[in-house]
Length: 212
Ligand SMILES: Nc1ncnc2c1ncn2[C@@H]1O[C@H](COP(=O)(O)OP(=O)(O)OP(=O)(O)O)[C@@H](O)[C@H]1O
Image: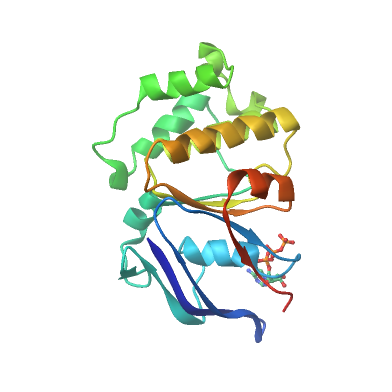
């Protein structure tokens, strides 16, 4: 699914990582670990086509991400981080807004999936009408996941999405991701987390970035 070949990234004339070579096959869940500053976020941003490499290449389903159609790529490869951004309005308005983008034309708001998922997480039906500004950090992260997962990505790039959440919210996000992974044998992820217990629960392969 994803092939990283001899990848390197410099910041201020110093290599953060170099000679990075690994392949993610469909269905795999990878932990990305390493000390602070070892370039974990930078790696996920490069994989999400948000930052360029300085050498090497990234292939997604055999195609070089340098030459790929970026909006179409981002519909398949979803980057989720600690502080999702929303516009003012309700949860439902924010979920629907994504579907109005050209690259998702033809995709309908899936009321049954959204309601069923919220019910499993213990959220009442009026959750969809809550203003974004009234959500807790954990609830906002649930909305960010619903917003992303409704467009059926294949690969999730998770950059400490639960780092600032209480244990109940962490459990809800983890169950959401488990259900997503179980729904399709192609669904794969890379997860940056400083929580070793979480990485042991949620991943089975490990990429360790060194210090410098
Ligand atoms: N946009 C940028 N401009 C300049 N330097 C950057 C940029 N992004 C990252 N860096 C630097 O690159 C290095 C790697 O940063 P990165 O955030 O990827 O590390 P990390 O392993 O995710 O760290 P942490 O575990 O603390 O989140 C750091 O030295 C950081 O200061």
